[in-house]
Every structure is written in structure tokens, then in C-alpha cells.
Length: 276
Length: 75
Image (cartoon, rainbow over all chains, first blue to last red; front, top):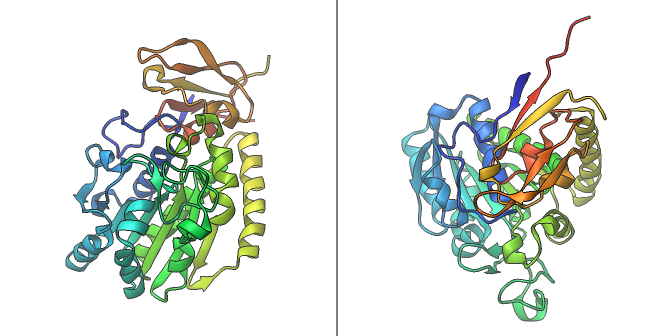
């Protein structure tokens, strides 16, 4: 028997963590940690973490790591990258951290075309502080302070941060993945690899948004997390590679590609394996 | 009973019983246990027919699965 998949990624010191059952963040974490080690960038990489549930991984991530304040990670990463241009610098932020608390940091960093990678874990709630609404919460989504669903007349409309960043000239690669099933994970891991490769080539700002499940914040059983995510967040935050080599893709192109890729990867899984 | 060409080890004590691996398994060879682990969570159990495709590993938030696949014999 040949080992084909390890329980925990090499770059994590402990298997234990404090995330709730059914949380999507550890899967996203696995995606980029495996991408970094498979690309052979471990010794060059410096991570900058924002504030959120995922901050507890600052203690167990086996990379050089700086803990930034709420929303400020892209600015901290800019400083690191300018002082250490050979390093591979990436930030890990949630939607509350990036889009509510520090929207201007990420937008200016993208607009300046800083050669860093930003990773966004988007679940539409402030998970760490109790599950209230963020700027990316989609219309109709229930959270602690929008119990009847987000209402455009009262709460306003969500910010589609991936689409916003794709429009900025400094952004070289923008993608939105998900971890609601194995096919989604495999695609997201490829997106992480392409983002880090973009940075290695020095082409500019790269951005990977990952839609993650938060069954606790969404008031649903863990088993319904993936389908709920796909039907609510996934319908508004359209998945796919939004900008590749400086070319922005249309929603129709993304929809068509999503259906094709999902079928391809599911067929590969049914045959007994997929190369992520 | 179908033949297994792969297998997984399950770190039951790390499992938080979220059930995500059960629908994710393409050959449907995982089921939740009746018993519970030390933290009181039900955990997955493996039956015959595993293909070693790693789908369970990709959807597991608690890093429970280690996946092995039989090396294909030549000829």
C-alpha cells in the first residue's frame, strides 16, 4: 500500500484545533499549506495572519509568521515583501477582517500591484465574535443580527470583493474557490498553486477567495453546510478564476466552466483519485 | 462485497462528528459509528470497497483520514 494522502498537512504542527465541527477553514488551510510544500516554497514563505477563527492556527502553522491587527495584514505583508523581495509573502484573512475591518488595506495593496498573495476565507459571518453579519453576507442570509435574512433596504447590498479586486489593474490573478466538496477543494488547491506561481514570477498582486462553511454561524446542521453554502453564497459569489493573466472573465464563462470542471473532477474521483 | 484497492486509517479521537465525509465518499463505504469517541462524538467507520481516492481527506476539517492505495501490479 502506498501513502497517497496524509491526515494533517506537513506544515501544521498539531492535528488538534479549536474550530467547530463542519467548519470549512481547516480544509482551506490544508489547500494552501499543501500547495506551498508541493511547490517547494516552504523555506521562503512568510505568512501574515489577520484576526478571526483561523488565528488559532498562528500557533500551529510551521512557517515564518507575523500576526497582524484586524484588517491590516496586506499592509504588513507589503512591508515584509519590500524588505525581503525574495520571500513568498501571503496573508490569511476572513471576510470580516478583510472586507469590513480593513477593506482599504486590501484594495490599495491590490491597486499598487504589490507582489503578494492574499487569501480570503469567506463565510459571510463574523465567526469568531458570535456570527453576526459581514459586508459579504448575501441577501436573505440569516446571521445573528439579521435573523430574518439580510434585507437590502435595511442592511444594504453585499460587497463581492473578488470581482472588485479583479477590476483593479494591479491584480494579476484573482480566483474564487470553495471547500464544500472534494471537487471544490481540488480546484481551490490548484488556484492556490497558480496564485503562488504568479507571485514567484513577480507578475503582481494575486488573490484567492475561498467560500467556507460556518454551520454554527448559519444556524444549520453540519451536514447541510455544503449545500447551503452552494445555494446561498455560491449563487452570488460566483466561483472560478475571475482574472487570469490580466484578463477578466465574464459570469457566463465562469458558470460554464464551473459545470464542466465539477463533472471532470467528480468523474476522476469516481475512477479512484484526482491530482490536486 | 466489492474489492478494496485502497484503504484509510481514521483517527477517531480527533473526529468531531460533522458527517461531511459520509456523502463525500464516491463508493459510499463510510458510515457513522453507533459508539462515540472520548469527546462524545460519533466517528466514521470504513467498510469494504475503498478506492483510495482521497475525497474524505479533502472534505475533513479535523484531519482524521490518512489514505493509502494499492500499487498497481505490472502486466
